[in-house]
Image (cartoon, rainbow, N blue to C red; front, side, top):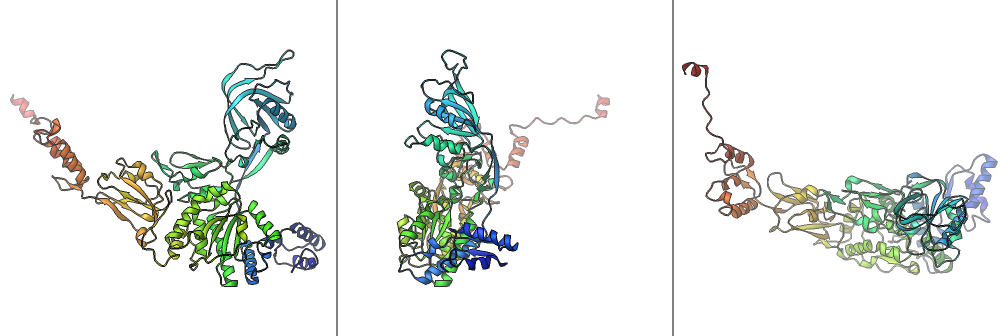
Length: 625
């Protein structure tokens, strides 16, 4: 059908008047179909449930030389993906009472206050020596310098230095009062007119914060229109789930994984001891933290790894069923990415006929595991359409990791790459060997491991990876290690273990996330991290990294301690320390705990032995005396 919204509207009315759920592949005219459904319900008291998707720009319009069977396959794949259930993210209620703080030069701050004073309760903190103006009774004025800011809509916390409040006066010149060295304030809405750097990173993602770009005209009016509406109750999506017990951030104050802290563009993540915490008011839901978390302590509600994997898997399967070919995949943003694809469809050759798109709120959500899962589903290439340089930097490390995995499986690293919009029209080149689809079951690490193993006929050695990769081994310098087992006791994933019967450090490589806690814990600096991926069966089992024979007690023969450590202690103390010269005290070092205590109390020359116990006197003894 070509004109379902025009000459063929009767076909749409026929299906909407039936009982089955209707899927209409045109979202541009969704309002028209909504009105049609309402009219049918009003007339017949019945209308079939329906929803719309857009496949025209992404699959319907392509270059003149596009293969029809590929276009049909794309359309079928997109329709199949649209019928998958969408994850529902929980939400929380944020309350704003409209308390507003405006910070900036006197002229701009007063002007902004006049624009918003009818809807918001305003306090102006001016930061210059501009002329003092007689303020309105609708807002307050003070003078000071902003030193720090934290929070989001409904809960901003601001700190100021050298704060002076404007003295109220009935006549005479106005002036500021006594200076306070520091002061704190709380507000619901924060308007920043200082003209310098924003108070927050990625400030455009901070709810309730408005920053005026001094290079643009009409900024105050633009901000005022939106700021005035920030009063009342608002629904805030809770984008993430955090399982603190899985977090490998720290143990016993020893630093470990900081990957999520390093990539969070809004600074919503902070250290809370042995684990991290995320401020749900500040979190903008980009998902970069979940993409780099090595233990899946952070997962996303809206764009979970399982949901992304399922969509990619279903589309690849349907496409292959129609063409017997391997498609390519492109991740793009729902904002600029979708617009770029639509423009290409209308004014250029359109999306390549073998390229299947998946739109996400933020492409930061894509990590190496999502890329490798797509290869596991059978895609020939996995592309990421970056909206800007910031997005490209955000995904660079994860793309580099995926490329290292491809290179280690003897595949071209260019099969995973970041692209520009113009490359969306290009047909796919020869990708080389495309592995058969694997069963995409398990977590991020499981699917990555299975996919890497499937992409090469034989991987003889572990694949070297860039520094910071969440897979790898550790090396222990046996000359330094004293087998204190501090690393074993603090390992958050159980990758390090010990042996119940002898001093020994065991290691299961598949469980290691390269958090570095063992390295920071080791008092002898004997541990070195080794980023790599070993897909052999040996990586699934514990192996001995370092072990020694225990020392046997010279009294009872019970094994205790580490033989080399006991011998070193004896070597350093025997005939060297005054307590161990011309004495049998050195023998105490060679005894287990029980025998050492007995020797100290009961030996002939025991330092803690008492005198000879006197004979017990009886009544006869007293009568005979």
